[in-house]
Image (cartoon, rainbow, N blue to C red; front, side, top):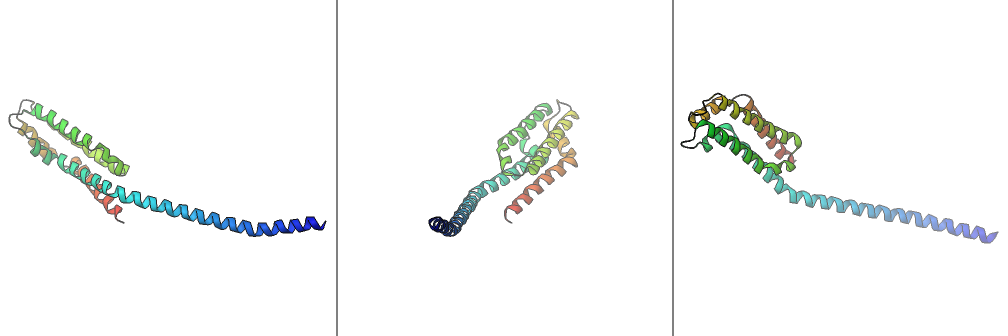
Length: 174
């Protein structure tokens, strides 16, 4: 009987020593893994930050380039009638947006939706302005109509999208 009680005592004292030791090792390993994870995340953020900033710059430039006044003045061509200019402007806007489509992965969904809304309002403006101008009139006539009609919704949505981009960039530095 003494042999059994000696073994039980030995097992109990081993458990008393080993269990806290195992818990200590577990805690240490868990802490090490968490520190490595934080270091990795920090490194990834440092690598991605320049790409995010470039995306914000490109999207800001996109909105500035396709703003009605900028678009009309930059894309005006000699000898182009209203119908051709209308088609040309639609193609330019779509090309500009398609070229920057990948930038949406760097901005919040809400900001991207605002940029898409600005584009939609711009396309509506171009189409409605073209509908109110004789297709055979000069491109200057269509350009003037677009600029005159570019108040209200279009300017509001462009400003809202630009403000969202600026706010997002500010949040990157907090």
